[in-house]
Image 1 (cartoon, rainbow, N blue to C red):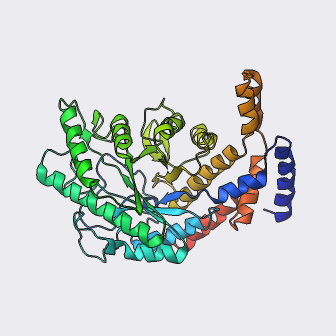
Image 2: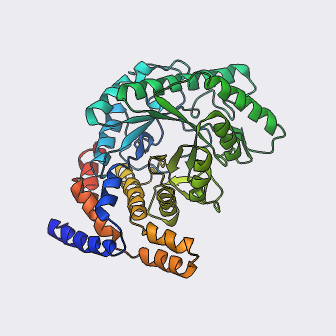
Image 3: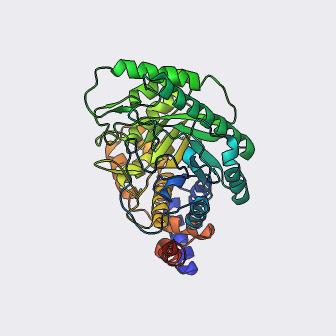
Length: 417
């Protein structure tokens, strides 16, 4: 896209927004501090580098078999860097435990150590990328339907030890990078059909979490992620939203809100302010559920836009951590990264450009018509010209120009795998 045209459009948009009391330069500066935590598992369909199971299990599913899946740690890293080169701003990377640098050796999950992620720490430092972390309860011979809530002491102990080690790894990562590592804990535990022991499994999960969190750390932050159900575990989920909100509030942990982990009629955006009244921080996993937690690539839809607007309306940009969590194997995986990341950023920019001061004034004066009218008119303000300027200043392709870069990478790299 022509740079002169971009600048001209931006100056016009700047004047239009200024008439509403909105400083586009301030919004652009705020966008530079919005660091998405991109998920490494989009590169290889949540396969990882272990040799323990060979198949994805634990209530989750990846669909599609598009050519070019990353097969090893070097290809994962190359794909991530390629995607990041097409996304404006500087972003974080979220790792699952199964993406350790195991050097071809079998390392079971109750034996994993910080040394298995040292090369990731070095890689992150080299490229200026902060790392986040996740324990991995799925795709393992001992996963079954229950892990941390398993009545079998041996199996439950295995997963307790795994999670303890993951927290220690997150602490080491955070200390090394000089910035807290966000450690997310999600387990798939549940039942396909009716259970009459709901309380029993939740008591076991609480006991497991109490033991896991008995060690205090200063360079990492613990997050707990709920879910409505998983494939093959539709009737009961031990780690429900109610359970984790109660546990996190009592134990000073962060709740993770995944946009695909609630009933279709629930608004994830509505939950943000409720949590922030009681918790200093919130973690998000942004995806696009289609009828169920299908992890479609995030797009600029009403749900994502509402979520970003709520963050800004709550003055919570510094309190909400934004992670991505989709894995689409039916299209070019690098393209999926770029579409989802840029869509989330577009929603956040629109939220930052909302005439919030005037809207709040109308609301405080009970001027419902004026409030609704301005909300509607704001939808057609020239935010896209500001977005193009954001891309231009960050040295990434503007508009649809990134498509050719993804196609070239597929032709020169992905097609040869």
